[in-house]
Image (cartoon, rainbow, N blue to C red; front, side, top):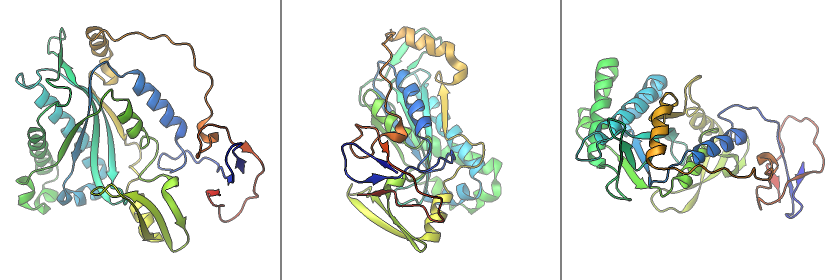
Length: 320
């Protein structure tokens, strides 16, 4: 049991299980990943590009997650590079980071991948940095969506023809959804995606009540941006949650182009072309450890005031 010197009430801290799908563990990994990505940000505008799988393909993703998640990363990244390579659009190689999500805000199955993309590319000869034409426009989303749809159909037709036969023919003719929005310096979107790098689907803070029969949690409605509450049966909540635990050995974060770990020479070339400043800063004071920071004021360390004996049922998250 812990108490904040400035806030009333008692907080509980649990032993860590270190599972990458745990809603409470992963804070250290998240903080380390965020620091690495922020240190690599370039002095250019950034974009958040999202590729979404249509409803008709979600059954295939649920039945063959390893194959289809790999295809989602591979084909969406290849689409970005192919469109960016066209001389009339950008004429360069992109470097970007992808983070895969498989859930919606009510934990429904909703496979999609987010890419953090710098606004520009490296010329084929490696001698020039070719910036995006505008600070708020990177590539035509209609062209990205059409290329992504075509590539995913080819994958299903060649690798899993039986699954391809189950997809309605109209799926390959209707518009697919690719979204691209400006992300400023990139720091905000890095922090946003970092929340899901070491965890899965839902944070413990969103769960309002839980018992043997029902789980109630809050979410933000995508259409209205209003805060709402969802109550599910315990079995349905577990089903929705567990479908988002990735298969063993599958990476949720991947790197492409000159941001790939094997492309360090090209990344150094990009940094040289952009004259990225080398900042040598004094080491900051040791921060409050993430798991002992007060979740309410975020200013003070929690102070241990006692412990509870081992019990069959865990105590509540917080008493206030």
